[in-house]
Image (cartoon, rainbow, N blue to C red; front, side, top):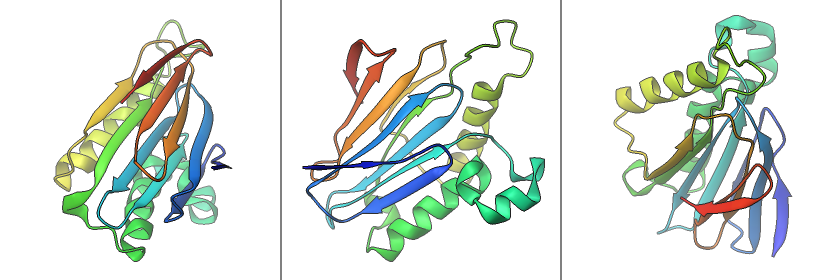
Length: 160
């Protein structure tokens, strides 16, 4: 198996069953994983901020930086590989409140709110999630099975 690292404000779609998609150190950022078990297409997005209106130029240059542009792009790219919306297994992690103990910015919460709005509007169900709190998370996705494993604050592991 080969690891494919998804950096901050990045995304990867794969139809290679020998790939492991990994994104590290999610704090307030959110990772969205999608998997179509029929065509064996997997995808992982790591977005930083909720709305592209914060910086239209950065959004144009890198739509994966923002939830409202990165999430639709993730789904469109998966569809181009033959994935179908009704078969997708969607899992979400991140959205923590790191280094903002008073909740002044609430970036993690705002990242999750934009995701939920998009999913409700488009009738997308979440099969598993691990969001909020004040934990760092690493997401490891097996492209063959769609299994998503989290390493939480470098120690504990859970499966979504």
